[in-house]
Image (cartoon, rainbow, N blue to C red; front, top):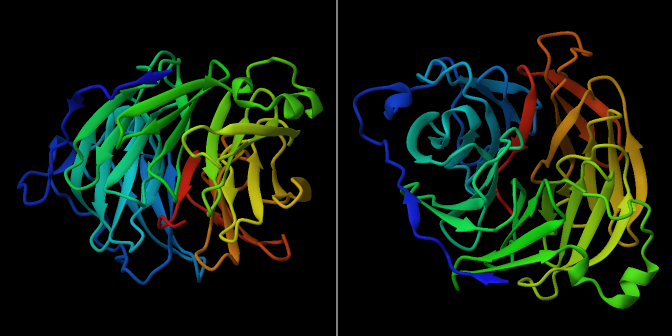
Length: 377
């Protein structure tokens, strides 16, 4: 099924140079004691959804270098920051605010707001390395959001919305080697491949893309149940797409030999409620937090087998994962809504990618959710 891009529905106002502060649309400074980022720092950004804040961690020293308090910038306590990505050079970072129907563009050197785009209940963000685009999905908390994803211009934060024609689009990823982005439904086993250049969308059922031989050989332990795809990750070489099914407890893998038409090649059990997957920088592993059993599963991509299962103090309702630029450290955000780890609830666990050992537990804010670093293949 092919669809044309819908007309632009909303235009974000650029805030640079505005005089008034806060949520009304102006530049506003973060905590004056915050250590500013630079283009040579490798920072990890963590959204604290119930604390209306974003914590910044130095990926090398594992120290918190500051926190942006969104209420201090004029937003409500219900701002609900959910996901964050940053420019490859670290100049700007972008955060989705579910409760404010907004995506913010922040200057990393000052942590001031320099742009914003209006978008209803934004959830996941995907950075397009091939252009000035930022893809935006819908929050999982939205019961009946529009059946469209957003394509924002990172320069002026204007947005076009693209129909995907399935309910509750959530999982989202962009291909680092092509113009394509991928979205999937929480409510049906359907996904969409979006080509914003050709203004084309291809929607397909997961199983429709399989070869007959692959379908016959696959273990269908999950039956025909709805997978509830939480998120996607694309391999650094752009050849493989991995997605996690909350309800099926499965990792699904698509071949992207033709990036416009993903082909499902396998499913594998990965544990209950797998959340946001992330590829290692070398593409040899996929790391997958599992919210229901407080573990992080490491899958080798050579044969798609489980290599390790990481568990330990600080891993409590793990949500997202991100690698340091050198691939040495894995940072896992933990919602910890049951306050299993002493503190305010919400941690980031630092794991040595080689030894699989937890080296540090960093308290952040309540209900830590999305985690991101500088965009890179």
